[in-house]
Image (cartoon, rainbow over all chains, first blue to last red; front, side, top):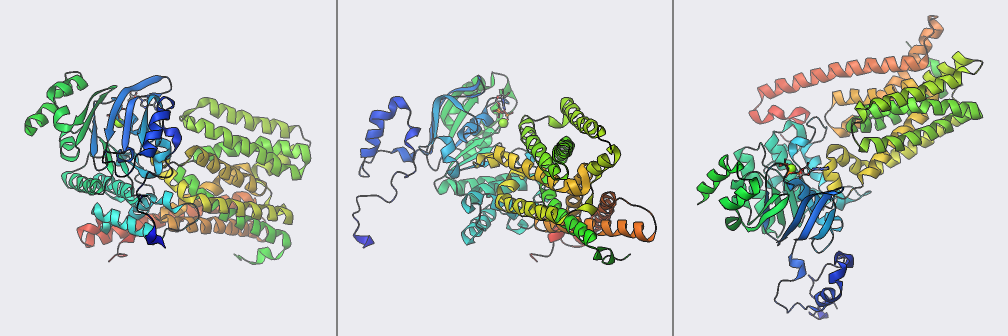
Length: 297
Length: 302
Ligand SMILES: Nc1ncnc2c1ncn2[C@@H]1O[C@H](COP(=O)(O)OP(=O)(O)OP(=O)(O)O)[C@@H](O)[C@H]1O
Ligand SMILES: [Mg+2]
């Protein structure tokens, strides 16, 4: 019976839970109609091939905008680095993509949905040193937290959950440490555990806020490896970092931020001395930026 | 000292059952208080529940205590959630003043009664020996409700305690979780107020969990340990108080004795914790480098 079904309806169609309210009122009419009628034979990239879409978004805590006119698109399998000085708004942009800080003008769309409605497909990796090292949880418990949304309230973690958690821990190379207390690991290892937790959630968009601070070369390598595996599976990644070398290594795209957007595009086009000087206000470059750029060219 | 003989009489048996239930309940919820670092908030609640207890008593006698405490506990839980969301609560002098004022209000209201000192002592330190069967049933019911709530919310509560940002990012309503937490703590305080009084209940919520934490790094062990320590504190405390009063002619208040026994258990657990860490360190020094941070789980994967 099932195999007689006509091939006209693609199994990977538009997600059924894509909410209509994600489309702003001014574009609702024609755009909504066309996206309904576009068939699978249309070779052009479709709406669902965009993981993250930011359209002239302004983001504010209360009344004062912290970021203005942020504009850009991230596709599946791509990573974008958020680069800018302290207080530029990198963490704020990540929180806005999570739907935790409001977008006051323009819009941000994740997988065609508003950020708040897309959270189940988004994973967030905080900085490990913000967490209490005395907290009595084991490494495997922390990784399992990535499965909580899928486990729900009543069920116990099942085989799928345990497999996903074990694989994620394997990917960051910490299987041996599964039963150790989280706080007994080094800073870089803790950061890897948090990445494993995010991987276990099987996200389509991964957000990392300065994951490489105080992380040694070994852990940095493990983190980058795991991130690239995730990208290979079609997930998009947003990384805020102060390290231009990481941006070059791990990310196709770079977004330069300092209240406004000073550039968004391929790393080699955006990470120019001029753009960086504009972003950092001219003086920060001598410290680190120039060296990296010299090393790159 | 006989641990069973004192409980042959019905009133002592009821007191024992009440303290066992409360010890288990407060031990469990105490772990949540410990993980969320809510000792200060808990202390605040014990202070604001006091005027509720007094007003309830003045309005409706013994039976009014529970409802007065419950009303005050709910209001405080809600208020504290709002205040703590705006941070800086622990430094807030205004809040400290409000607490003391509310407490003073309770004292003033009691002092207008004729049997003033007995009433005051009863509210502050409880009257576990006069617990009725009905109160026992009430405590048991409250415990069941609280434990079911904790069981349902355990995963979100754990994530919220460990990593609040990620909990929010994952879409959990952390505001609601915080209200639920404060309500659970308030309900335990209310349940325990008649038996151990508003002052001593804080010990019941803090000490067993802290002792259990000293003994283990694993949540799966900390919760049962806290329950056991809470229960032992109630049992040994009551037996000690009975023993001293009946056989040695020294009157020891039951509630106070329970707290002292709990403190003793905490000190023992502290010593146990030191010994545990020393053993772990010695084993680590002997074993390969990778075991250096293995903690008590060393050998499990071996
Ligand atoms: N909760 C908040 N309420 C109001 N303003 C905030 C809040 N958090 C951050 N800001 C402001 O928003 C601006 C951007 O902060 P943000 O933390 O996003 O910067 P950042 O780029 O992540 O900096 P860093 O490199 O130091 O992490 C800052 O000026 C900061 O003062
Ligand atoms: Mg930041």
